[in-house]
Length: 566
Figure 1 (cartoon, one colour):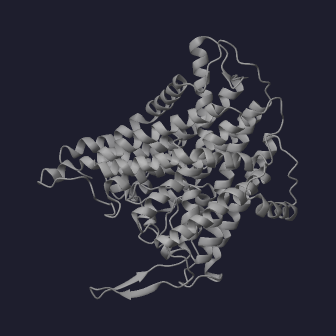
Figure 2: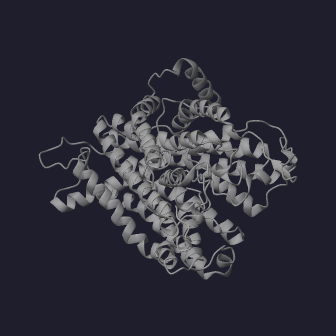
């Protein structure tokens, strides 16, 4: 570990902390329908979109209607992308003349981008036409992130309102998320990436002769525009197979730093949005503190594991950290930080190959996803995932002191606890059960790139990633019909089996009457509560996933010290 490496992390964390309030305040004003500095330009366009789509912005929805609107929109989006991928060979903007995707891969990819996962069982530069990249994948990058934002805002309204039957209008929230939040910032960030050297064109790929005399194909295409929303929307799908390790998608240490900031910016800002909308900004800062603590600990552990390096290599007299699978322009620190950021959120972009990390270095991204990616989580999904943990923590605190649990003046009763538990149980159910099935199936084992505990880690990571709607891959795991179908189902259920209970929780909280806090009310903005919240998150993760993680990365780590690799 080096001083420049720590300074890079400190600079990133400081920038995130400094921008959380202005970004969060802006989003709060957007979703409350207040005037912003972009309103003179965008408000007329917003009204035009409402008229074109037949949306009455004054009409609010109960949670059931809000949920149905979200599911209907998602279903239409899935059909659109699936048809596009199955017909791209006959459509324009396909200078490489790529064929149509086969049914299983089209299904997996459509589900992947619909759910903000961006799991990729394909190489983008040799599979997707420019039209598929722009009108299919990039479009879903916007609307899937906007859907997550809408769900989070609906839950915040449910907490903030009292004796109310509605939680907002899904169509209004979706349009405002795209129009005021994601689109303007993506346009600016795309220009910044072009300045850093990321391509943005419609030209065919170029074949050049290298200095060694070989022919090499240089990819092009509308990369910068997709790269910007890929990071800002915590999507993660690469235009090319190497993702953000590619010098086209991520050319410089400056672009690497900016991409990490883009991944965290909106997710961190939502903590202030939450505090502002519930009229107690201390609540938002408490969530920020808990999320930041998890992120900082995760980075420290990953950086240490990768800096210590491989003992097998050290026995050969070669000192230094583990640079296998890493780009020299980012080094150990930039790679460890990126891996932590991208799995603490639901982004899933990678600038190094996790399969080549040290076992304990690879364990941290795995644990980040198994805890629900709440530090700072995906755009929207991180906040509502953390609030689910808050509800459970408030319930536990109430039991500890023998009082009815209260959350911002509202009693947490059986229905709220049941809905929160439903959302929390999705992750272990959809990670552990499919992993167990995969290791018992010939097709599940046939796609492995490694054996032993490392191979088990590949399977465990795949289902952890797809369930968490992250999309990063441990590496080594190949594609076949079993994994195309299984991971597709996992992504769908991982997205909507959490979103539906969260919206039901929003409706339940909105209908409750608030009571004034009393002398015995438990504060949910104190340092004590932050500590209890972190303990709850750690205990839930440790009790649930420790046995499986011990069979994978932990066992792999112990074998390394015996000189064995897999």
